[in-house]
Amino acid sequence: MPNAPKSMPLTDGTGRPRPGRLLWLTALVGLGHWLLLTGLPAAKTLGDTPLASEALFVTLQPVDAPQQAPIPAAPQTVRTTDPTEPGSKPPAQLATAAGIPIGAGTGPSRDAAEPALDASVLSDAAGMAGDTEVVDRQAAGMGKEADLLLALANTEGQDGPSATNPAPYRFSFPEPVRIVYEAQGRSGFAYTASAEILWQRDSNSYQAALRVSKLGIPLSVWTSKGSLGAQGVAPLRFGEKKGRSSEIAAHFQRDKGIISFSRNAPNVALQVAAQDHLSTFFQLSSMVAAEPARFTPGSAIAFQSANAYGAQDWTFKVGSLDNLGLPAPAASGLRLTRDHSADYDIKVEVWLAPTLGYLPVRIRLSQTNGDFLELVARTTEIPQ
View 1 (tube, one colour):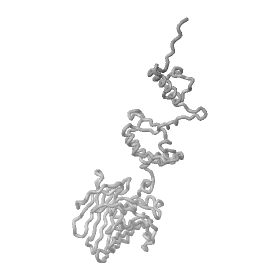
View 2 (cartoon, one colour):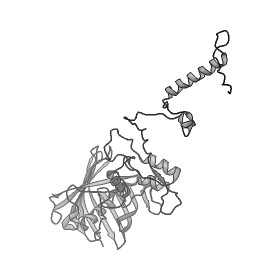
View 3 (cartoon, one colour):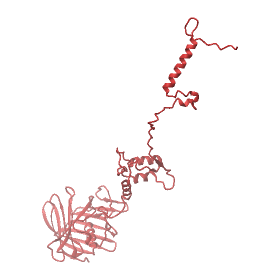
View 4 (cartoon, one colour):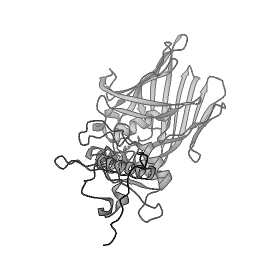
């Protein structure tokens, strides 16, 4: 009979546990506890698991209450185009087209307001990657209103009639004429004098002079000469002489775009349709005579006006048709007024007679200190 395998007693002859057997028993008990703590079914062993190494990193969930890991929000999609591709804009054009905040429009309602994407952000992005197009407009806070604002921004600065950019004016230049006035004024003391304005022209140039004298002695002389064209009266030189003093002048250097002065005053930029203090009256006359219905009470005419000392922006407000109490045909005149803009500034009032082709039949120049000069027409004649 074959020998039966001998059992391995757990104790030695003295009754003490054998050390080797005790270690194996402890290891088996620890392994059983570990299997229970990790949640693996007791019927399975590591050998029954297809990928034993992966099973160590699996977290089992209860079957009756499954949970899913949260899905991360999709990032904003931005498409970047190469600035060298056909149809792409250079960075400077992008910054100009987005000259207003883009995120200010009304988009879908949100629990929390998102920061607006403004022009500086687009400009920075354009500087790094050429033309940047935001595809996800909702994420950028954009909507139809932002598109409308962009369209308005692209049309800003275009030409068109407005309060500051009126439709082009038309002109009807007066025929050559001499207007004789009675003058009165105050310059520290009251005085009376005689005066005349001489206007001469051909098809494309003009000369004008205003002379105020007392007993044949000149008190003040203004002269103006220049061209006539699409902008109306266009002076080239304005001269001013008082009493026996030397003449001083302003020069309209249109090729250089400046007005220079003989008294060494600083040059000023020459504006379109700029006038001098004498040509101003004939510019107004030419404009109103060409389109009387355009200049209703409350309307305005603005342009730059210069004398021998400097230049200012003058705005004339159109007033009413006043009864001047003058002999026909200068019985009434359309009043235009340029008010003082500062102390020691000049106020200009001129009345244009409709029955005389809107010639200036009354002129009043006054200062805040009370000094003034007023001219009232008495006769008109054709110069020889």
